[in-house]
Image (cartoon, rainbow, N blue to C red; front, side, top):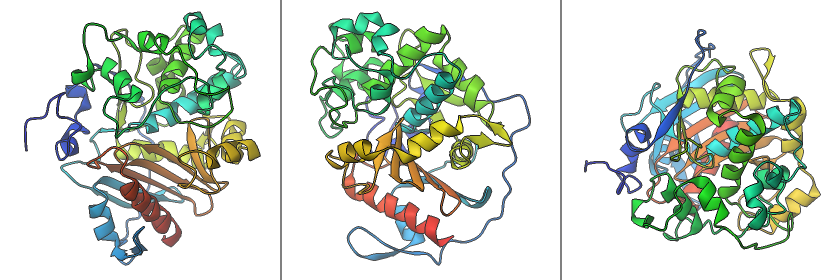
Length: 383
């Protein structure tokens, strides 16, 4: 395989290796696992080879073929808290960390819920209360809640197939696209946010997915607590899950995490996170995320569903919505989703959590995502 570097790391098939080696490519910090013995996840392994899946093109594929055709790096199924299937590909193993991309957002959404419950801030407050520099930008009226829900006003283009869109320009700040950096480029994630002066809608007028909003939430969290995001994730979520591995976060030059996409973790540790959400915020008899926050995220309301239905993502989940940095397919089924095929599938009805790390050749291949979602739903309903 070709040498992996910051210029080619997103290119297939190099991304099959680079997504497992982000720490060697970019500035990162570690979210330390607990010094306690990792929480035990019982193993009760079985074969899933008998499962057949009808793909988006209407063809029937075997489980193995579907795993291969959707560029899977790891696939783990938890059923009633037990690992019933776990397999790794492309030299990945249970200890390997893998780039999560926007699954990172779901960790941020849960952290905001924890901090709001502790009275650190009110989610109805404007982000400018904590980051007043944003008063003269497209974020001037944005609240913590509208940032969480991707319903804020700021104009920001997030079309991954457009190589010069705002998402990639922001990612360039943390080194992901060196070709987009010149002497006039923003040096930090805050500088980038300050450059966004325009609005594309009224606040809460519509749902439009924009990663910059999660990075602004990271700024709000650090200003409101006077602590680093990574320390808060470590204290309030990661160590309470009694994870097996550290996690890794990509950061900018000031140490602010690339909270929209920069976290890396092991497959089993993401399964722990998913199980905690399945259990209404509880893990090993400890309430980590308030139950009310999980319930509110899952249920949404008609406004959330209407905004989602009118968006580019509406066809993905016809009954769905997006709230608190989580994708909600319906009242029983939630997902964490990241580009290039990263997913945590959480199904309350079937008692399953499925983690799928992937290395799609393109960031947002609609056919590959559709087939991945079909695969996850079929497995969840078959086990």
